[in-house]
Length: 207
Image (cartoon, rainbow, N blue to C red):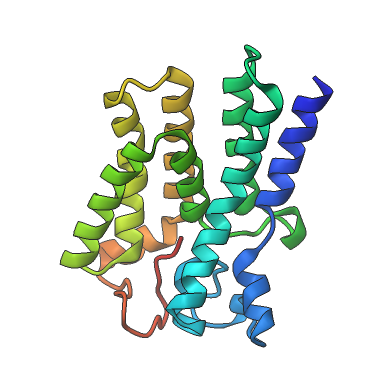
């Protein structure tokens, strides 16, 4: 019990690490005060280039993968292993959305959610990635691609015969990503959302 609680707390604290903000500060840029003011990979890419943006994406995804893998390794074949792995993934995701280090004002969670599902079901991630790429190719809206990929994930997991707790976690993550993108959704509906490759101006869609 104590180990499980400690792992959940560790996952949340690791998820709270603002990778994009830390990388930005290494280059003398506070990403919260530039571009879209978001700490996610899209804003970092626009401000510091694609390589640093990809590094941010990888770091945010790793924040979920590491505690989930640690939980799996520590619990071995114990019956509570599955639920604890899911709990660690969910805690890391919540940490990114509501980081204790930044007064609970974090990113939009797409990259950390990617880490959760890469660990749980890479095949479902492949389906979601395909949808993301298609939307980016056709409309070049990162936010729309991210929202569509997140919405597809619980459906993909269900079709792949995933356990109900995994589908439930994916559904909760998709809802929270949608809520975090509420401003982007409004801009998409008004035709004001920035497209990838253009200056962010007032709008952006970011992981």
